[in-house]
Image (cartoon, rainbow over all chains, first blue to last red; front, side, top):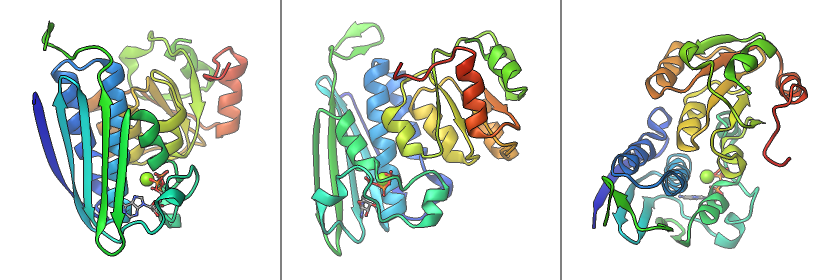
Length: 149
Length: 115
Ligand SMILES: Nc1ncnc2c1ncn2[C@@H]1O[C@H](COP(=O)(O)OP(=O)(O)OP(=O)(O)O)[C@@H](O)[C@H]1O
Ligand SMILES: [Mg+2]
């Protein structure tokens, strides 16, 4: 493992929304992960963080970097998702109007995360919480400080 | 298109990035849904939007966008401007509404990423 990061996320904390994903993105850039891989991982992390803030009570957002790629893991305690297949559809959202006014709630987050990842798994239990795991595999070996890992 | 031209065409005020007006933007998109921006917008695009909250700046940073134009004369608060300044993301402010602002840039040759 090259790098591991873990952040606590609080549901409803819109003031901090995106801070964890920002830190993850900056760290990836700093250790020299290529721009495309970094961008994909950042978008996944950001959507995952927003989902915890919008839909859950609390959770954690983790990123693990290895030579194979970047794993993003979002786990939360929250209402869970009753129908995952439905939630994965583009445009499906239960977000209230207030969230739409902020520019979220388009029902694009989960399909986006899947689109930008090479591996994507989501499990959820109603009344307990949701777990999303996404992997962006590095197309080329990760280059760190100019030398291959 | 150079950011300087974007400023001139939209008769915009530069809120952040006076020093970056010679930078090029290859394409643009007009949108108020940040998830759509994250899904469909290519890196280095210029974003035109009617939203003025922190999520716009976050989205621009996550998605590697070139710059942001706030339309319809909606000016973001100082905190948002500061956020963009820290990140080196140029911000513009125009009185034109979204459709009009996009149309002006498109007519001047700045395409979306479909064409
Ligand atoms: N962590 C979660 N906990 C509970 N429900 C969730 C969670 N993540 C997603 N959902 C449910 O799945 C739906 C679709 O999620 P998705 O991220 O695709 O869209 P959204 O969050 O509503 O809008 P967008 O992501 O475009 O801002 C949500 O509206 C919500 O009902
Ligand atoms: Mg979402």
